[in-house]
Image (cartoon, rainbow, N blue to C red; front, top):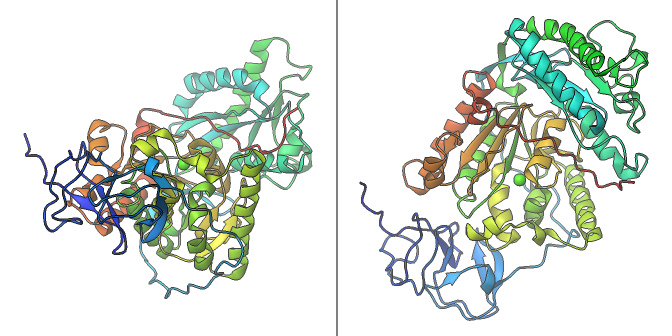
Length: 527
Ligand code: CA
């Protein structure tokens, strides 16, 4: 049995008047903080749970509480040194106005290119690269989901064993397609999301559609001629290859299944003929996000992801960060880091649109934090945002994508892909943008995974990594334990990304086949 660790507190910035308690299980009232840690010599006036904040000095009522060197709230009462600073004693600061922001003012020195890093991937006809070789069946409407699920089960059982180079067969099921106001301006978001997911680089350019027939989202509206690759020599003006369940030729349920299974064969043959080849790391499109965050997220896992993000950008790759409500309180950092004033304006445009979207629902960004976030020590969204934004590293922001948009050829570097913070919606939109590897940090723990793309899960705490030893792919808690630096862990993650992209390492979510559903962002009305 190992000895209990001495009391440990961690302060993020020299100006902070709070530090967080790092010890498993927190620290009891009466604990004297040892010299050498922030608040050394202080006595805790009450029990402080793990990940929660302790006042390092007396903080008067209405005075600012600082973490990460920025205000995360104002004291609702006098807080003596050594007291527990939690969400019920803090008033949240107002969101920064979107006027008068610093626009593209930070000009970091160009980082040295990182040459020579490669992975084994699948080169696609459109120039993109896949990290997995999947047959994905596009659906136009939820009505066909049950039929497609049975067809996929048959394809896996009857055909897939004969195509050993194909990793899996998946149905791209969703809740859209009918019962929606298809011509509402905001309907463009779910429609282009589905279109672009069909074209994700992990699907090898093969497009196979199952439609019902009478739905609002008709196949040629989902995939108009010119929006998808033609790999089988067909006439593009005919639209994508589509199996329509209401077609007169279908007599009985089995004829529908037989038709879908038969259509899958030519796609499987072409996919099976592909081989992994050595590709530069610049072909990676890595989406980063967090879910089930705690106070550790901002000083272990997310900074390590940020360090790896900088390495990826230096290697010429694309890194997408997202989650509008979790970057809103850091908007100044984003607009100032934009590579050009146009990029800064696009960031403001996206966040302003999202403020108004939330306003329509009579909430604001503060609706983001969960009971688990608060139990984990995050007092409010201002504190959560500062810990979330560090996932983006330090590179200039090169491009901005609206929800459901896809990266255009040549768009590389650090990209802000505007999305809600909801884990599955963010993941779905990052898939549409062209993500081929997903990095996901969690403090409270979530078994999240996607069928379309490998998901590397990074635990913020060693306790979580120990308990969920067969769900977490990397333990960033070693930073809090003093066993590794952010730099060491960032390099570990960078190498793990290359291994996972190459198929040498399967993530835990892949091994257990943990697949969350696609969840569309539909801000438009349903009918
Ligand atoms: Ca999230």
